[in-house]
Length: 460
Image 1 (cartoon, rainbow, N blue to C red):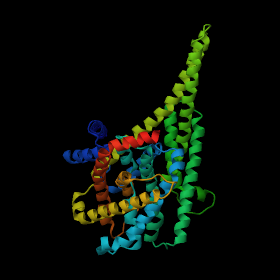
Image 2 (cartoon, rainbow, N blue to C red):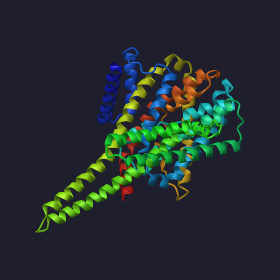
Image 3 (cartoon, rainbow, N blue to C red):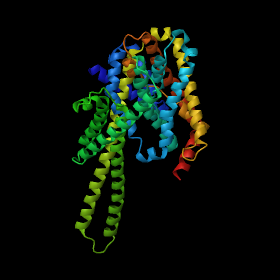
Image 4 (cartoon, rainbow, N blue to C red):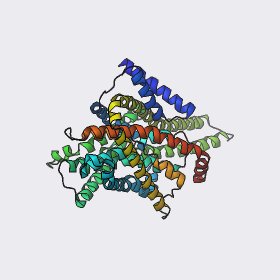
């Protein structure tokens, strides 16, 4: 365990140094260093060792990653870009699955994949990794609207892909009948139910926040809210059965966690804004009092005490957010090291053609979906216009992540194409991490000055 801790810290340190000095995104550095370490030291340390245990690790760490990414969104952003995010995360994913169904025979005709199998396969490789996107964007000055579109799409895309995978793909794979009515009904139930549940748990967290001024306690409340929302949604049927519901319905843990965290963060952000305003007023009062001829030391002392209390309150909220970010960085490092352990090179080579075909197919499909989005945005005033540069960023912000492995572990063990699906999913994750990250760096780097000007114009 001590060796594992040392290796995790060392890899994270070197990855952060590479990011700081050479602008290499930390996910790219982490996964590269993890592979080097794994093969250089003959598999020492060993965190999981197989895809099943890796999936369990992803489920354990996923909520803290979602909490961190949700802190990047605000209610104002959701109101302004809600229509765009709904298109990107819901409509685009649904259209992508539809396009996949039309091209599946051409791409994987030799496997004779069923309707359900195609949905399951493509849903896994359509899920994106918001952590990688946020990490890359943090190295550059980008327009806020572009960041919200890319990061928000990555965040909500996971929820949509998982809903399609579980409630459509797996349901059909196990013999369920798929109809338009069923898809519409289950989608509304899961999306609305998860959102309402997340907001309610977020407000419970806010009530707990009022009981403490301790920064560590505040951090623990954030974690309890995020994980509590995630678990409550995934095991929602337990609550139903407690009241005689006799149901197996579970909601989206991802969506519930996102909305619980956004609710909590919204009020925390408002508190920081109020503290900033209060501090300005108190500083003005202090200047006014100190300029008087009959200045009272007791009044000045009182004002200093108020300012100190306000600063401490404000800093506590900000440091809580920083603490969560630190937890997410460590969690991401552990995930990338564990991912390096489950890569089977022989299996990757065996299905190399299928991996490349799927990678190219999903890249083209994503590019088409983002192009369609750009065309729509330029024909309406209700959505942010997307130019060619932004299209490139949005297209290659679709880096895949650990959630795809979690989905992989949910497929029935006796499924005939499980080996091919495993190789394809893991292979696409690896290719997207290196190829998409590199292309994103090139696009943003070559247009850095233009993006900086767009950010300044946006601020004005």
